[in-house]
Length: 83
Image 1 (cartoon, rainbow, N blue to C red):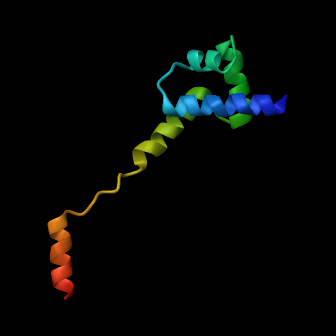
Image 2: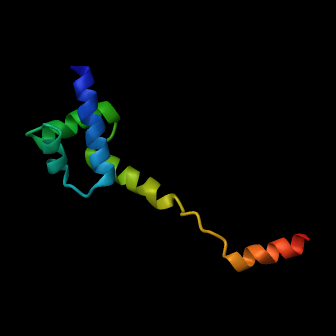
């Protein structure tokens, strides 16, 4: 029973962090007909409400800066400088 519950919560975490689905739709997609019941169980297992979990993962995603490639010309200049 706990194994299935963990699978459902893990799938819900994926949906919350990777989609814009409303919490009620996430609850339904992982097998809950009652969004309030889903929210209580989700919070029990994760320590956060589904909305708070989504907001916390959005914050993490926004703080990661994309790696930017140095332009080719700048690389050539650095190579010349080092010679």
